[in-house]
Length: 529
Image (cartoon, rainbow, N blue to C red; front, side, top):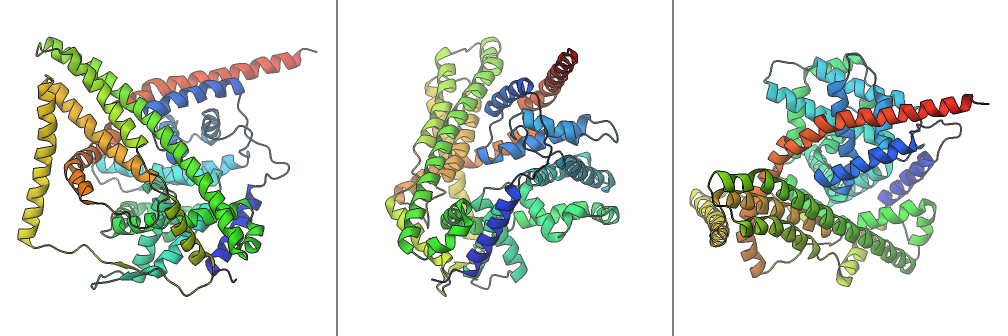
């Protein structure tokens, strides 16, 4: 049976990825002291509970955080790539003795490139706009650094394979205007979000590469020209990410990404063997079943860890707010302290998070059979297509819009009003009620996002009954408020700011001191002979 051209390209890219992953003989690697590494790694684990992130973003988030701190504290003209990489290794984000020392000048070149853009960008804007540009560029820098240290060839190949396949299956209807180039870019973005849950900073880096094919090796003259129009580029990329069809395309890609993930898993194990395996559909199905079970196990493990870390994070945050604000306010301002209400406000939010995350349905046998049909379609050369019609959201009349928004407003009033009455019956104070409602909104949003991650192996559109629609009517206001709050918390998280500057800077100085001290002792011991 003839393999599709996309599969053949994917196999070739996996072979190249395997070759790149082989350590080169004679390479010296960056090493850090094991004791200092254990101390730093312990701190990173504690931080992971306070500043919880999804697993696939942990390393990239750490790179971005450490990069921003080192840029903020650096001396003018200072090269800090080596201590920056050492800190990443000590924190457990990369194994010790695995990053080649030749990567140090590469990373320094990347850092210098983005600092050049920041320094030469037009400054005729408000401090808020410039701060956003600063965060945006360093987020993209973190993505480039991660992909320089860990090859993304395999992931990129799978993204290109799925993009090409899905792009062919999409038909625009009802006169929806979308050029071939825009369609390709939007599918490309949607596939990255669906396949690997890449964040906007990483996708922005990939879009930079589309706009500037030799982005890794730009000369200063070209960088100067880019710096002059960097804010225009920023808005252009934001526009791409926020396109009116972006969400529809993401939902479509999310519903059909499982076959591509499984094909990628099997090819990754042994690229040379896939052609032989594909000649026997029974063997291919058995291999797919095994890959599916492995991925399902990993997914369930992620969900359990999300339940654990999410619940602990919510519990600690709620405890902190309760004892720092609610208890003093109720005791000394309103004189209405209620221990039972405080207890409920501390216990219920983490229990809700636990319930939302542990009640996820991840798969079924029927789902696997649907996956196999799609695997066969994308693996073999065939004219069979899975057509998906796509159209821009229909414009509604003034009256219809008014009715819909009135119902939406009613759902807000009913949802929050009902919860407020329950809290009132338990004698919650005004402050405790507000804090509780905000926490419940954050948890409903966070739990819903994790539930969506739990359904990542389900293929096709999932049917939802009438009762689910009623449930949506009452929970959507909580989710929307939670989404808005999560953005504000990410932007103005005081606890994270305190960790970054009041604790992390002196802590890293202490860790580096441990490393230098142990190195000094080792040298002195070697002198004794």
